Image (cartoon, rainbow, N blue to C red; front, side, top):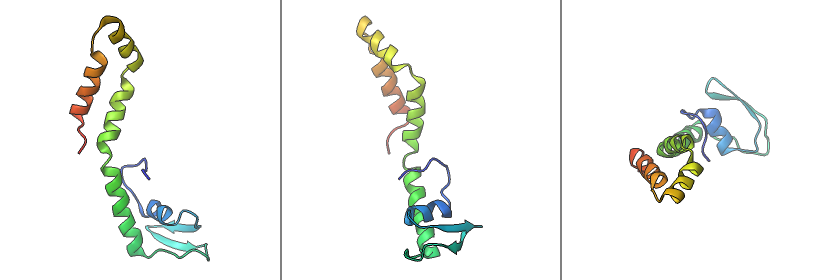
Length: 104
């Protein structure tokens, strides 16, 4: 599960731990647990999930940076031009992006 934010918070971690639960979360803490049939995670479990999710998110930084560069390329045109002209412009552009943002 990857979240689109730079910093994972407790509410995000709680949603990850208990996706079917209903709760209120304010000021970094559960203020009301509304799901009697679902065990409420401890604060330590929530904190550990924040750390786990943040590490997962951070480990994909290179992929997010690559995607932004890939999206800026007109890849179909590059591939077509390479086919017509016998060049490797598309391949070279992809290789340069991978070199700029290497996979850890």
